Length: 246
Image 1 (cartoon, rainbow, N blue to C red):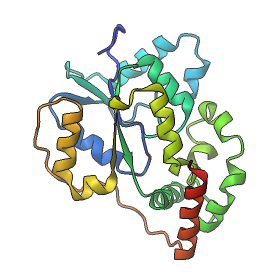
Image 2: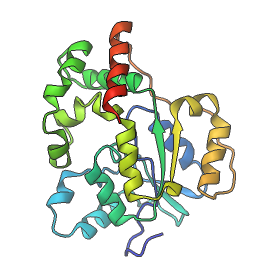
Image 3: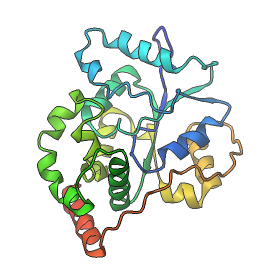
Image 4: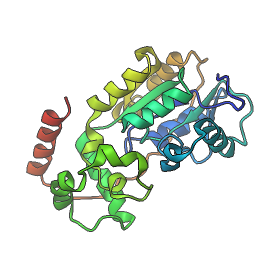
């Protein structure tokens, strides 16, 4: 576990948003050896206050204490905050506090993920543009993204409108592998969890060296609001990911 005075997570679902991390966390939390933090996402390592505090260790411990009042000594403590993998600063802070942690990364078709992210921002009233205008404007909107995201507030343009940047999976995985051994990282896809529920969970439990436990297949994936994006625009988005995510 950890040598800290309070046990910290040793299992993360660090990404990616709108890929089914809520469903995965729900399934994993049903295993008797896994304790999920309250509300699934602790948002500790991406908290803007973390970089401003003088005592990071105390900040992190206190933040998790508030999220783990139900912890009963399970082998794994799971934090499923899917923005953790998005920025090197978040990964670095995670590695500094939990250097031996295991990670289960959940990926989704990047275009479908971007559209789902847009639909969520629109529903929350944080997006005024139509989908094509929002995607087209992202480059201008995201100027200063990597410099400013770590200190930006939770309700910020960098979080709400980063539809395409979040789909650069290769970059994010390279960052994760820079701070954690590859043997500590398991990558799965939303499609696998949907279509091969039992086999996928068995694979994850093997990865975590946990005894197998049957977890019922439930449709706990959040419904995706219908957003129309023409086929030609989707093709352009796929081309964007092809040339930008290297």
